[in-house]
Amino acid sequence: MTDLWAEEREERRAAARPLAARMRPETLEQFVGQEQFLGEGKLLTRMLAADRMTSILFWGPPGTGKTALANLIARHTGRHFEQANAAMVGVKDIRMILEAARRRVELGQGKTILFLDEIHRFARNQQDVLLADVESGLVTLIGATTENPSFSVNSALISRSTLFQFESLNPDHLRTILRRALTDPRGYAAKAITVDDDALDHWIRIGDGDARRTLNALEVAVLSQCSLHDADEPSIHIDLTAAEQSIQAKSIRYDRDGDGHYDHASALIKSIRGSDPDAATHWLATMLAAGEDPRFICRRLAILASEDIGLAAPQALQMAAAAWTITERVGMPECQLTLSELVLYLATCPKSQSAANAIWTAMDDVRNQRTVPVPRHLRDAHYATAAQHGNGVDYVNPHDEPQAAAEQEYLGVDRAYYTPGEHGFEQEIARRLRGHRDE
Image 1 (cartoon, rainbow, N blue to C red):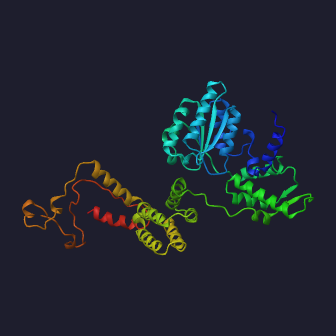
Image 2 (cartoon, one colour):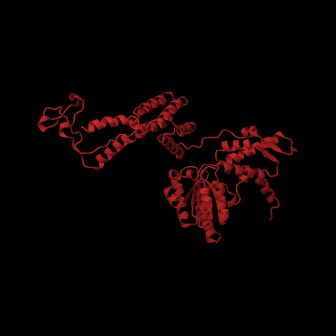
Image 3 (spheres, rainbow, N blue to C red):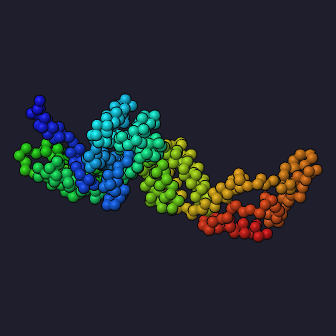
């Protein structure tokens, strides 16, 4: 029996969807961003052109097109599309989807694409359920995650999939998406809407690479302006004030248990190592604003003071120790001042890895080379029969020498571990060592 009202109900459902959902691209040509793998001649483009789709994993921040692209791939390849959220389905549901996919293949109805959003929320044993059908090709898996798959996805599943990393959309991408929403029939083509450039700029800046968040701001602004005007008002104008009221301050994109934690810590350390105080301060601020434990930051900075600055500026380690103590005692938000001072100091210190290289090389020798016996004249002589064994005999006490330095063998093998760098206090150390080593 024909449902006479089905089309009308579908139109109402479509009209009720948020702007971001309505504006999802309908063709690959409409998709904006991710040119690193979807541009001309890029890997995913070639896979689609050759109709050689393997299971794939989409990894990247929210609002960058993972769900939209999964839908487009299914449409482009003509495969049946099943969508599920890993946070809301269990193994039983997945088994039913996989069984239905097998039946479609057996009945000649084609293959199935299973889009599993938030795949990182599946436990490892739940992910194992997918392995056999993914490997056999009965189902093509598209998994989407905001977390690094290396930390959250079964390695066996990763090895059977092609990984595509999504990047945040840049300002030009977001501007294209906003302007399309203003002129597309699915958006606001039927309304006479003008948006000031500074309003667009504000949405793009606060949207922070997230198309969904940016489109939501446009929708809120339009709806709020409509409520302020009469229904017969011929046009809507959105200025900067209206734009500011339509979107909240951006949230810091930072995963404290996964990728963001390590990436930002790495950026902080490498910026200090590279003597860029501005970049280092930015990454410190990002970590603190995102709620990173300041004690973790202190630990990393203390290591850096020894590893990357060392004896070029020996006081760096003292500064790191003092900052750690103060941070423990005062906490946030006050300790951000102490950490900022430490980061700026470390970034502007002369750099040297000589002390770190010395211990790394010595540790390697101790572990992997022949054992070096302690020379007899350096051995402990504080027991009655030591001299009978030659222990401590002929030892020269440097304090008894005119320059408080005694020329004698201290290692027993010809090996130099420490070579002072050319910067900071190590210039003075090099001068001292030249005097001792040349004696």
